[in-house]
Image (cartoon, rainbow, N blue to C red; front, side, top):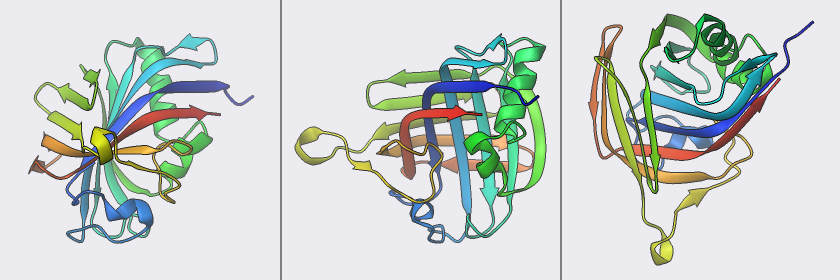
Length: 200
């Protein structure tokens, strides 16, 4: 019998494209390739009888061309706060092995560079989102001010990490990543954040 699962929470991403990233409209990346970091914080969730509340997941993505046409290289990081069963469940979900929207995202992956259990700090405060993995990455974005000081948002985009939700457009204050031979030092580039819901 297939596992039953559902997770809800908040996510953000930041990449090397100019704001707003053309990849979400199925256009080529700004520089011809995309280096992106995506983080998810689960505010409520389960995988069969496992509670996944409060856990985090991070994925580093390198696409050497058009993201919808070029296989990605990815590295997956799961929260070491979870026990082994919880970590295994997160890997199954975010590697696309358990169905749902993550399976669709995983269909773009050409090579998995590695899967690691790490300490992940995820922060969600007002118009800021940030995460850190000691020795691996520091990433932070801040929402772009829209009309009247409100949010600037995008909805209905065809290429979505969190389908069904409008993206808040942001810019990075930093994206530093050093693992698997990649060294990214990026700032003042694209960022997005929104809620997300995935289920089997």
